[in-house]
Image (cartoon, rainbow over all chains, first blue to last red; front, top):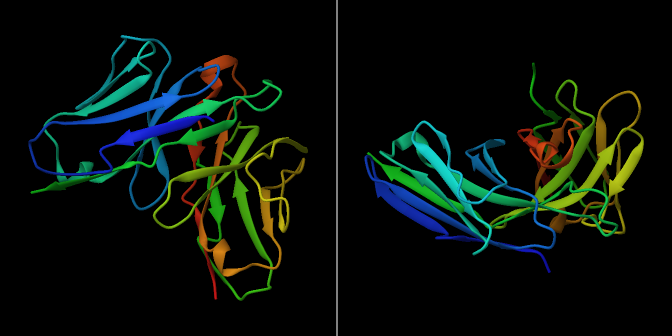
Length: 116
Length: 117
């Protein structure tokens, strides 16, 4: 069965700290891995990773994929209170016929709380 | 370019009533997906649709639930004879048609919170 597991489930830090969020996966016919940030409303897209070892970066956020060990990490440096959210990792899974990858399998999410 | 629009944002139904949730995808997106988020749980895939076609409904309960994405108008997720266990946040996402992994990014709406009394 396809599986995505995130750790830790929750994390409390102070502003300025650096955090590392983990996502491991077991899926058939891996194609990509996605990171989302969910605050009160819609999950918003952060990164898509397809190749091992290539870091994706956006401001204080960065992410990397290891296809051999089947995991990804999301780093946030110099955290701010606005980074408080649920961070979701997701992997597209092929349907039974292998003809589409529309189903995203999500991890449980990591709840990040950043205190001033 | 407006994002994915869902309405209503909140919906209250009594047990046995019908719930209709609407989703308008982003402009230019032809693929729509529905997910359910139960309290204290992660997002779970329900169904994937293209215009007038259901591509993958492997996550949708066999009874009481149906989805459509007509040629004109929004996608509709319909829940008949709702029960308390249907109370959840229902999210819609959309994507354009792009080859291979480039088409994997899904853009989410703000969700509809369904409460069944």
